[in-house]
Amino acid sequence: MLGSLRTDREWLTDVAQRLTPLAQRPTLLLCGRHDNGTAAGFVDRWAQLLPNHRREILEDAGHFPAEDEPEDYAEAIDRFMARPDRE
Image (cartoon, rainbow, N blue to C red):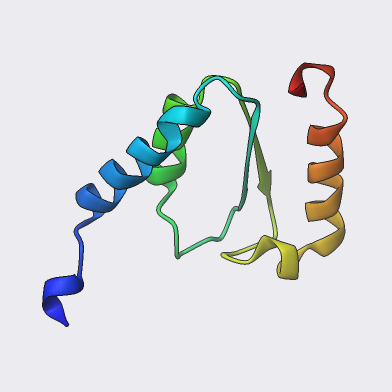
C-alpha cells in the first residue's frame, strides 16, 4: 500500500501534465474556502497553468462545495457558462 502513495509534488506534476491540453480553454476553478482536502497552493498552481481561467471561491464551503452551497455552486457555473469568451 505504501508503494501506491504519491507525494504532493508527484501528484501536482501529473495534474499539470493533464491540464496542458486545456491551457487556452476557458476554465472554471470552483472551490470552497474551507477545503482541507485540496491545498490552496494546488489551486494557485492550476490557475498559473490555465491562463484563461475564472476562479470562484465559495466562502462557506469545504471540499464538497456542491453539497455545502448548492445554490451558490449552481450560480457560479451559470455565470461561467454565460461568459461570452467561453466559446
